[in-house]
Each structure stands twice: as structure tokens, then as C-alpha cells.
Length: 272
Length: 103
Image (cartoon, rainbow over all chains, first blue to last red; front, top):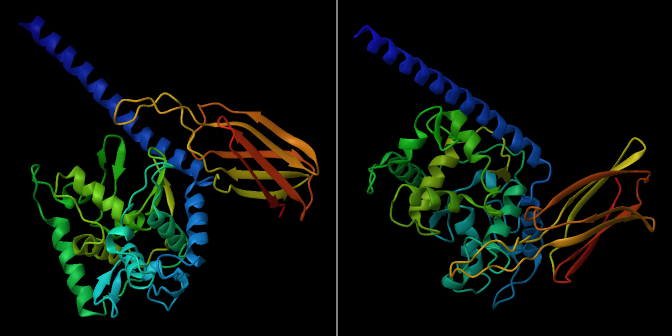
């Protein structure tokens, strides 16, 4: 009997050591990932997307041969500098709240003469054969807000409505796994595999996350936008497919963007 | 044609620091597509950097180099306002040359 309990204690001790070792490894993995990101920051391939988007911006496009220089992102036609830090917002001409990507689609349809289907044919790119103009344009526009303080105004009742809807969605549990955004993003120090998850219910967490999207994903070799981030979160939650340029995507973006107010925008970033 | 590179070159002390981002798929030839067919290898094979007609870097690359590669190197000499050229050739014979002014 005494023998057995000693053996049990031995096993328990060994288990404890293993757990401690794991915890240690996790802590250093997070540090190592931070170091990895820092090392990559210098040569962020997102710049290649910015470059392509910048070239696209001034070229006449679509059936009507109109350039994006006539596209109003909220600060006047063609004004790009600082525009992203104030989006989403309500646009009178579109009669709805729009995030950057919705606004780009709107300009492509209303000014350049594309059909909505043509404008959103490739929302998320996949290699050289399937490149997304929207990702390149987004990269360029957000890059022009680097260092600009996030300042999303809830001055319009429709924007306030979208914010409230986004907040509701963030906490709404559903799907086969009974998941909400908040399930993963509502607590500090949560991880998915070895990737730490930001707590989006805190100001610092929301700021750090929002200001580093869009980002170049090294694992995909692609620049990914905010709409992609939300689309993929929905997929991971086993929610219905999040439609690009939908009010659902815009509402969540409004909620997240507004919560990042006060922080300097730092994208497009680079992520694992 | 291949997309342009992004090149930054700056004079640090008596040498020039060059940072290059290249736009390339860098397909290893090891991956398969959704139908199970091998995606053919497609990667940058030769990279050269020239300054005033002199080759300051010559490299042979293979499929182990990442997609959209970043290359940073230093060479002795260089002067502000002068130009550095970077050129690559891939295994399909596609080429790209870009240049940057040393700042």
C-alpha cells in the first residue's frame, strides 16, 4: 500500500515536471514568435501589394475608364492619406455604412462601371494565377494611414446602429460549436495552437489587433484584409459563410475599428 | 511580365546597405494542387547586383527560398545619388531588372 502511494506520487511529480516544461516552452514560443515578427518587419512583402495598389489607383479602369482618383473614401475624391483611420463611416451616396473594402467595391461599380459580380470576382487572392485587385488596393490605402491615429466617429445614427449590431455579433454564441467571437477573444492570454489571441474586449487588445490588420500572412504568402480576417474567423467558428461587403462584416468591423480609437495605425503588418 | 521589385539602398559609413523585396511565387515543385497534380517548380535561379558596371553580388538560388523573397546585403563603396541594379532570372527564363538610387 505504502509502496503504491509512493509510486503514484512519483508519477504525479513527473507529470508536474512535464506540465511546467510545457508552460515554459509556451512562454518562450510567444517570445520567439515576437522576435520572428520583428525580424521579418524589415522586409515585409506587404510592400509589394502596396506598390501594385498604388499603381492601380491612378490608372483608368473598368468599362467607363475611370480611375480611383475620383473615389471618395470619406475625406474627398481621391484623398487617401489618413482615410483608413476614419473608416467605417456612413456615406450619403451609398446610403449605407461602409468599410474600406465595401467602399472600393462601391467605386468600382458606381464610377468605373463594373458589375458587382465583376468587382468582387477575386476578393481573396491565391497565387500568381488568381490575384486580387481588392487586396492590392486595400494594402495601398491602409499604408497611407500608417502612423495616423484611429478616429472612427459614431456621429451618424446609422454608424451607431452598425456599432451596436457589431457588438451584439461579437458576443453572439451560435453554430455547431456554440461559439462567439468572445469565446476566443474575450479573455487575456488565450491561445490557438501556439498563437496568442488578442483580448478584443480590452482597449489595448482591440487597438493592437485592429491596427495590425491588414497583414501579409507568411504561411499563405498573401496579403490578407480585414474582411478576410473576419471571413476566416467565421469559418473557424463554423458560422455561415460571411459574405464579402455584407452588413454583417461591416458591423463587426465598425465595432472593432471604433474600439481601436486613439491608437496609431500600424499596418499593413506581417504575421505568421 | 514579372512584377517590379522594391529596392532600398542607403549609404551607411563606407558601405552601401541594400534591401530588396522580390515578387515571385517560388514554387518548390513539391506541392500538389487540389486535383493531386504536382505544381511544377518555378523559382528564381540567379540573382545579381551591379554597381557602376561591377558585380557586387552574385547568387544562385533554389526552391528552398521563400515566396516573395527578401534579400539584404552590404557592399563596400557606393555614393549617394548613384544607382544599384538588381537582376534576377528564374528557371522558366523569366527576367526582371530594377534599380534604386542610393540614399
